[in-house]
Length: 241
Image (cartoon, rainbow, N blue to C red; front, side):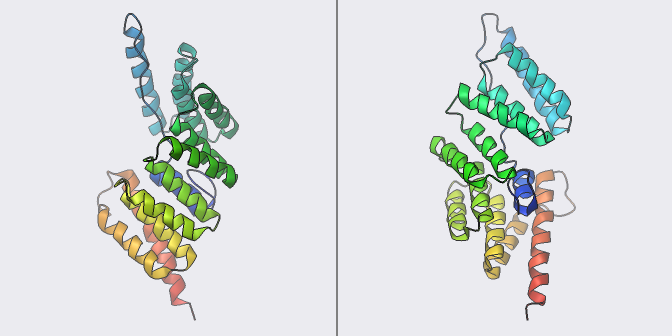
């Protein structure tokens, strides 16, 4: 991502959002009330909102989450989820407002710090983004998506060595290795260590499904991004005289 995480300008931004799904839609349920019916209805609305968002129907997803917020105005998760949909739909001020509300209601919601950090990254406020990623990791040290996003932010700041160290720590948790190798490879690439970059890119490609398998959209897009980065690197090396 050249501009930053889940949505911004440049490789790094767009890559973080597209491939890592850095933001988090939380489907956690409310406690049931005396009849138990509200909880069932809430779960259904949440699943419908998630489905609508995945299908790109952001208007419907926002409407469903707004209905949940009207039912439970003190639920931080619904504000966080609606903020994420606003963010994905490009309604940035509304996204920030909902993230702030979520954190006012629950200052310990690590997902909301990560999502708000993605907002700051997308708007070029990288210092604020790092502060929120750090807060998310203080609350949940095993939050790998936040670690990946933090590493991308450090890379955007051209703090390549610290970014590499960040990705090394992320690998210790045994999650999302392909995404971590991809972002570490991109960091080596931009830092000028092309041998390490190629090694990481090829490591990712060996783990991904073939081009013939497009059922996993995220894996397909990651393979496409890696191929583009690898071709960019190899093309550049051909003219390095």
